[in-house]
Length: 330
Image (tube, rainbow, N blue to C red; front, top):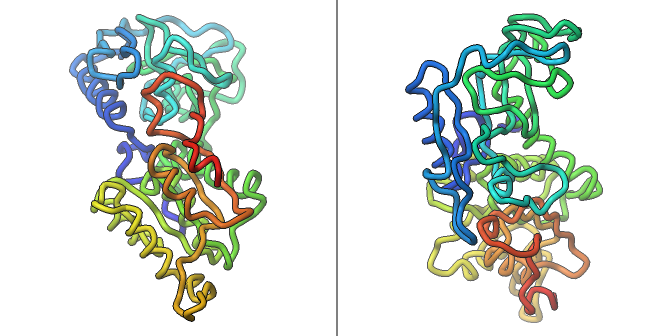
């Protein structure tokens, strides 16, 4: 079965982007020292600099924060998610149209799961004790939070018995849908047994699922990740080859990986010796130097699915960033 969520993400199955995820997690832990607390945005990161711990301010939270309005619910926070795309919300402008920047002095928010404590008079279908999930970006980082009822979904009790509720923030939630829908819709149902797939950020919550889904369809899969421990993890998941982007010669490692996949046997040169297989599908979570290298190894008329550009999230400028001339020519 496809395994969901990455052990190299947060404990709730989402990928942590250091230092963003590390500092957000530290801020959450600091807030737990108070019985009821919240984490707010203290300041924005400097231009072209990462999010740091001083951007956050844990502070006590009044309890209850307020009585829910007719179309709201009051929830006890159970799980919160840390996702790479949240990085843009720390800026004064996100640069995208699907999420808004955090306001100074206001709580950080993300996807989350809560237990309903109280419902507004006009709310139907929810009752105290229910688990609800806010699957995207508006669950505030508060011990107890007031949410719009229209933005949460009730977790069916039977589903909660079949899998950990936190899976709704991972393989059975936003990250799982990103992987599946990306391959099914944008990728046109590819890959198949003739494809060679490369995945950057392959040990993350999305990348690890993409690789497994591609393997289930018979493709050869090469994953690029950030440590030897993650290499071992990807091999456990069934990736054909896993590469550490911090190696001394990633270009040589990628060539060796493409020589070792079954598709390389079909690419015989004039000397009848195997040639590196061309990458026919690239799922890009990272961008930057890793993607520049992978693009050089892609076949004519191959496809690139642009899911994320984590390497550029701290930089100001266009998104996605323009390709270097060499990659653009390819």
